[in-house]
Image: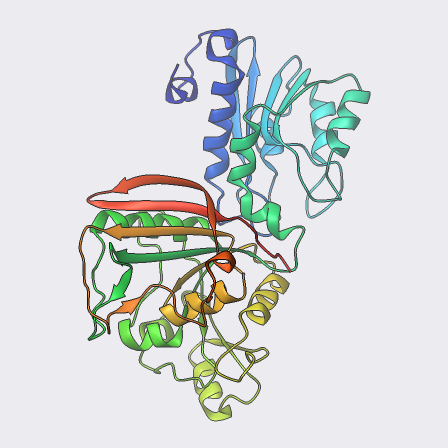
Length: 385
């Protein structure tokens, strides 16, 4: 049975729908909050009574109702005999909002189907244990892997001092992101660019180096109907970013942060700040060639960000790869070959002289976007430090 049919109130039995179909409906709800709930996870909930879906809900942003409460509110918290499907175990602590377990108990829910556990030490297991002690039947782990993957960034960041980093690149089959003359627009297809906008829509920030800003003058927004824009982060030790760059011109509309060092030109800093850019001083990279990527990520985590999309260029990619600060890669390969010794490769930096030390990718999957091939994978090790 299609999830859309459930969502439209189709009254087939819960047994016919099955717990997995209903949890997929909850996952669909949860996805509406991706990129909007930071520092909280994205969560979706579905309430079922006598085999019929009576309400759905999702966590829209931090400080608003959690998914379970959002769904309960739609039926005035009258859920006697209902089953609750939630992509993440309910919380049992008082934070910016009230305890979800108390709302569940007060509403009379009889069973809770939970997808994933919350790695947050304040939450992990407490809510389900409390509900079980109070007589609520618990079914845990329904579509657990899918529910965990939905919040992979939150799951990482809540246990580490930095956000989850996704490295994205659009490149030719021979691994080039620009020609020898620096031409890079557009290597990949319009379909791939739509996928990138969709990716930006779900993550907290997009990060590039100042070289990319100077060469391409990007907007780094999510240009899709109903999308929200990520924070825009530029690594720029000497504040070379042009004052007429699109990022600067729109900084009062979309949060734009320039990560620099304490010895950056004070006059240029004041000029950027007058235009709405937030200039943040962090440590310089070893050797003084740029900004330390680890210090950048630490600063972003202090601002409660949990996910960052690193979009380039080659030097920035290399800095993050060299430091082993990449947790996921998404590579869009266009069916063309650029060639030439001076064409720009996707990853610069120091690199590794030994294959044994190369960043190995596992859990690799492949998809298509128009004529392009999309490779997604995860490094075999991620420092998280």
